[in-house]
Length: 86
Image 1 (cartoon, rainbow, N blue to C red):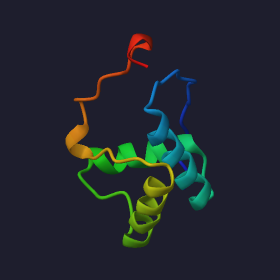
Image 2 (image 1 turned 60 degrees about the vertical axis):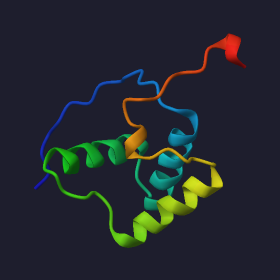
Image 3 (image 1 turned 30 degrees about the vertical axis):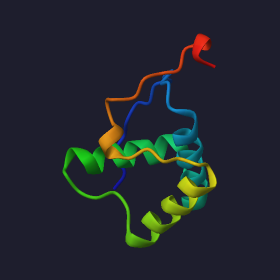
């Protein structure tokens, strides 16, 4: 049975290549980007892995395609490039 929820629009800022990988994965799984993020968060809140081995393989492919070399170790250590640094 489906649970009723209320969704809100948000203006979350994400790293450009990370967003491309997330969008590519959502497309591969035939779900919306919002559904993907909700599912990942709910799995993480319960300390459960959100993806199968096959999906992890697809994520690795997408990371390669979009040149995403960030890992969990980089979390909370990212610094946004200023316009002067370009």
